[in-house]
Length: 178
Image (cartoon, one colour):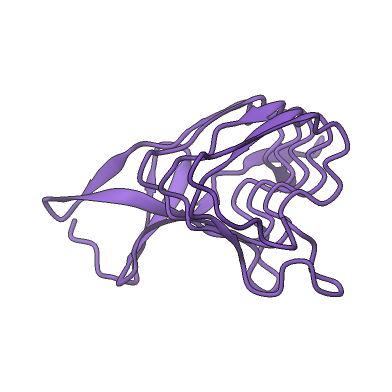
């Protein structure tokens, strides 16, 4: 079925949306939990342990690179926020932006390799990832709008175990909120 620019579609465990800016991951499939009577009690993302984001997906016969991971928008949570059992994260090499709180609260995540193509890290993108010990900072990355201002956390706010940060050799400036 053909996808319009605004149609959200599911591929494996994620929902995607093709927008004029490119292909976005908009949300993860949640796991349903039922009460003793078989009624839906709640949904969460606690079963997600590994996230492998493909390099590109075919939409209407054309391959598009996955360039955006959406973050918090209003009351909509970050795509992978509170995936409390996430331990492995593989990001596509052409990724441009990780949205606000996209991975916030991923308590078991220990290391992240950000692709060199990354341009924007949103507010609290990896906030409260309390087991995260190592991260690399690409040369051309900047913090998203408002990051580091009152009530807007920097990308790694609350990441209490961070001990190793590798800065790209071409990095000329570190954003204050970083």
